[in-house]
Image 1 (spheres, rainbow, N blue to C red):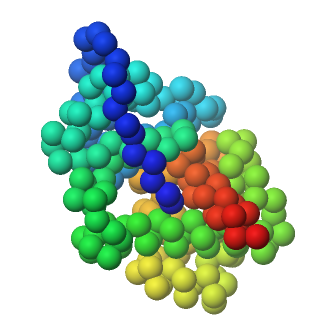
Image 2 (image 1 turned 120 degrees about the horizontal axis):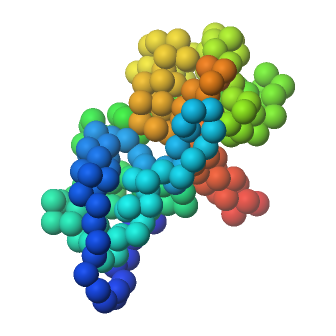
Image 3 (image 1 turned 180 degrees about the vertical axis):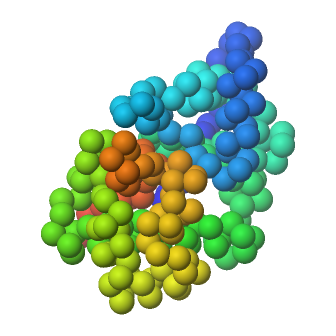
Length: 204
């Protein structure tokens, strides 16, 4: 994923911060989760109050507040996440091993999902529609493919694809399971493939 850090803009007036939402957002972000613009609640997508809180006071408060703690608040279309300022200032080769390993696992599982869904004859949109999603049976079928299994192992994901997707994606709010138990990508998961599409177009 390409990163678009926020730029702080001049915005007069005192910020109005919701303490409960601010603390919950901080807890999630520092635990390695992303905060999407929407959340899946009771079988349907709804606005995410944590995203709205960060967006509302982004420039007047949150960018500086996170920077003072050594973190950069990054906004991509549809979601927020954080990274350390040292990580933001250095290239990928100097990232700590834990961060690099987590990123590799996320990218590896997403790559397997995207390629696997298409190769199994499904429309990619099935991964992004809240009422559709990819069933556990299909995930297991994709994960049993020797090539995809090799990709997962290279990312140090030794568990079956459904469990790997939960650890790498669902637990980080990059994807979720709908009421049918099918896997669906959240905004942050979709962004990975949007980036790939843009890179493909620019390379033509």
